[in-house]
Image (cartoon, rainbow, N blue to C red; front, side, top):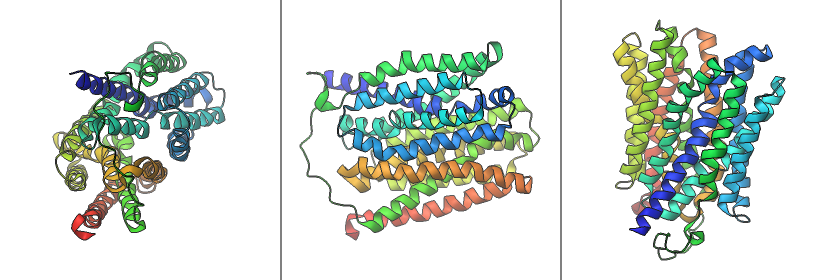
Length: 395
């Protein structure tokens, strides 16, 4: 019973860390674009560069995180990342020019790396063993939960108070709610007596992963991350199709609901069958959803249903990255995952900009949707190759 309580407590604290990192630092930053642009008298496009810088900061710091965890306790590294995000939000609230905001974006990305998917999945893998998919799916789903809850709250604070106050309240929330969770997280070997899960028999370290398999894994996961960039454009897409601002917001909400449900289901399914097969099924669902938006955007019910199915792609860019890397890399998970983040975070950042550029060039989101469908089909093909190469019968 104590072991179960210990694992559940770890999971809940990991959920808070993911909510604070991916749910707030990443998913909530967009609501500040317009007020910041007005305050600094620049275009929203220049402010939105922060999203790219957050992703790049996260990507480029991942290998450094792997080195740091060999020298310092994981909870201290996570706490330092949260403090860095807190400082970046406080600095953002008094920023007088766009270059300070760019610095804040880089600091936020570096900070987020230290208490986001990489450390959280390491902890859950340690506490839950090989069957950690359900726990990983539940934790990563909190990025959508926090995004859905905090966006309207912070937007209301911007309207009733100011964006500066809203940013300071966000920093206060990270300090009061998320920081204590990170400080109390431990790996099993560091946990207090009586609270740890039973330690499994030590296994020899996995051998080096063959280069062809690494290339296929990286290519597959890069494709997965390029599929998610359209989410940032869903509100604009709906408005372009003639929907009101209120109606367009519900399209994004449906996408977030799909995000949460599919992450939970992916983790559960991957504990029971090959996670690569689950990824293929999820990619098919997301492809059908994207095609529904492309073909039936004028139908209010169908565009929302398509957005919900599109939410399956979020599982591929988060939960699948962890589960596929665990399957391929074994005990070298942290090393391989950290390098993978460099490519996937960069791919996501570039895809968001690419879909916006395609809209600017053509006046329609249809070319971007067609490109996403093509990338999804490629990801299915690559996933099947990865399964074949990692099948024991193939070796």
